[in-house]
Image (cartoon, rainbow, N blue to C red):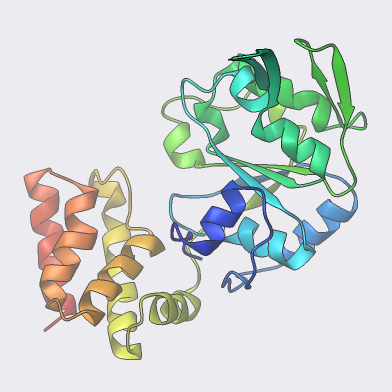
Length: 277
């Protein structure tokens, strides 16, 4: 599944609200049933899969399906424990405590989704541990408060194993606190249906783009660091639907974002030409 646009669903998720309409998602396996059982049994979940394969859209869909608010946190190298938990702010009348997004999710019983969790510092990831086992609590050292997670709270993290394996990974003591759901690019017919709907493309164009994407993914063994995601195929479909010529759309939305290396770009250009005769 493609990941979401920065629209209604994304805004609602970031603010901790419940999406008003169902985020589009086509299951590729039993991931929906597995996640529902994890939520019912208060189990933390790890979503593993390549960039742009639908992890974020899946969690948005599940939050809507379960009727839970969704708080999304984009992890990065500078993400501190205070960014998650909260901090004291200086105001004109003194200092006041302000909850961070993780704390709000714990209090409100929301699903808290940490995207690309391994990008965060290890000392930041450790604060998640008490929320992933039977304790389901969040200690706040700065205030001396310990918050018990409200009913409905669930911790969900995601990461790209192929990319992270070359850089950094989660510690085993953290990984074993999660139930892991493996994601990959959808089967051909499913991916065509996704690109057709999300890209406002006709069936023939969607099929050609997905076929191109699968051919390009075969270049990973030839040095392509990141293969084209469903998200990129949708971007190309939208450009084509707007009137941009097919080859131009593919070069701008798929080939150029993937590599600057002349040999690889040339090989991808040839595949584009072969896909749109």
